[in-house]
Image (cartoon, rainbow over all chains, first blue to last red; front, side, top):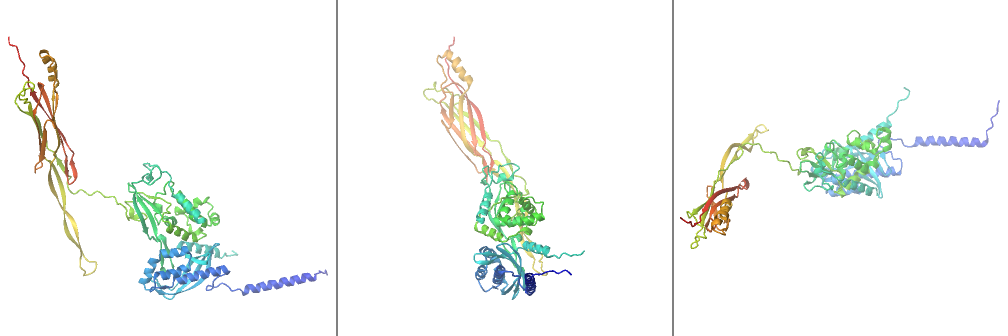
Amino acid sequence: MKEIPISKRNIIVAIILAVVIALGIIAIQALPLYNGSQPSVSNQEDNLASKAAVSALQAFFHVNYRNEKETWLNDVCAESTPTGCQLITAGADAMWSKFQEGKADVTATVTSQEKVAETATEQVWKMLVALSAPLPGSNKIQDTAYVVVVKTDNGWKFDRFLLEPEIKAILARQAMTVTPVKEGK
Amino acid sequence: MKKFILVLTLLALLIPSAVHAQEQNPWGEVFDSNGNLRSDLTDLGVTTEHPDWMSVDLPFGQSLNLNADYHRYQTANGNIVVLPSASTLFFMAMNPQESGLANSVGMMGNGYGGLITFLGAVAGNNIDWGRLSAEHPEYKSPDQFWGAVLNGQQDVWTYFSGWGFITTLLQMSWNDTALRTAYLMYLNGAQNCASIPGGCSGVVTPTLPQPKICPDPTVSIQQPTISIQKTAPSNPLVVGQDTENRRGADVIAKVSIPPVIFTWHEPIYEDREVCEPSTVVGGVPVCRTESFFKECREHVEHLPDAVASLQATAALDAASQAWITSKLGQTHYGAYVHQANFTLIPGLGSWSGGCDGGGTCTATGQALKVPFADPGTFNLRLNVVTTGTRFMGISITQPRQLSADGTLQVYVTLPALVP
């Protein structure tokens, strides 16, 4: 029988490695798993960006027809980039007229669902918006919004809603990424 | 800094290159040889629309309608040149069919080359070129990709890797309305204005000729009577032999011009009430007044063609002058022609004229006791110019030149030796 010498140092290293691996497995299992109602916020920047999107959408869908349009715009613009504010302002007349005609009195509960795209200074978030009552022209009280938030000197700010073709392009890209590949055939 | 470079690029695109007017090149109707806008363009001003392809769909069925605005010009031949704002142009490029961009004959100078440059400037940094080249190796350059986008063969949205540039572009357009980089030409745009960007607002629609429902007007011109003649004495004597009275001769000129007959036809319409049954059962019929053609009413106008000027002259004919200097000179040494030519009217005499209520115009001129000093035959010449005729400010006939000739004999008494 052949004797294999193992040094005391090697045994200690092996024990330490085993402990580290075990702790790693425990740590991974202990992390919160993604589910549809929880934001996939992976770091501080994402957290700030998603909070900016939530604040902006809550302001945008907080509509009280008794107020002046400017009051609503001021609230939205406080959460927006200057260009985002200008974009909303450009179309505000027609929107506010519709809100007033329909006597809209609505508040919103907004949840960030998923960061769907990003660059160094921009993030696109999929958001879930729940309204206290339907807006004029719609009978929905829950809908999805895709918004762009931009990192500015004053923190993350809402920039705009994604255009329809942009949403389609992002969803198509996601579908290509997550489509499972069947193995063994 | 990026924004500054973008603005500079866009402004560089603004500078029109020299386009030389050619029959086949419609841009010759837009720019002169120095590349400046031609002065005969009609500036239609800025038109604003809210097209679907510039609408941002929001959750809960809401929408944010952005302005598409165009500064437009109309050429003398009815073509329309459209200058979209920068943001409008961007959205047009992203929706070439819906926006009507595909129906234009291209941008000034280099077709769609300028538009490709524009897209590269405003969105080039926001394209994921790595992924694009991996998925579409057939595009050898960004220009080929943008060309495919403009032709509707490539969906650009799939390859955008940034989002903020759109609001930046919109803000640039809002802040600088003069930032218009593309001249889009729509041939016969005035005729087809409903299908061009900006629609028919302000477009000067070419007027279609009215269908002829009455006969054309006619003009009838009658011949005038015109004369010039000697009236007294019966046998005028050269004033050199009539030293006591120096009677000379009287010449009178007359012209009578019948009216120009102008016949035209007036379409007569009558108003009738047209009623259509109500779309509601038991409702009151909807009536409106419409004009219907009834007849052509003939009008005959007697238009006076008055005398504008009258001139009469007398000239000793060549034979008489020759007789004086040759034959008469043989018997009367030193005989010569004293005055061969006379301006009778105006000068020695005057004329006056007018028109009567029937449109006939007359003029009479006379020169009395014209001191003819040379014997022989004087050729009388009368020249008259008329005013022409007008009706309701429109010229019907042009001024006419009338003339008449006459002769006048002046006598001399010669002594004769009788054997």
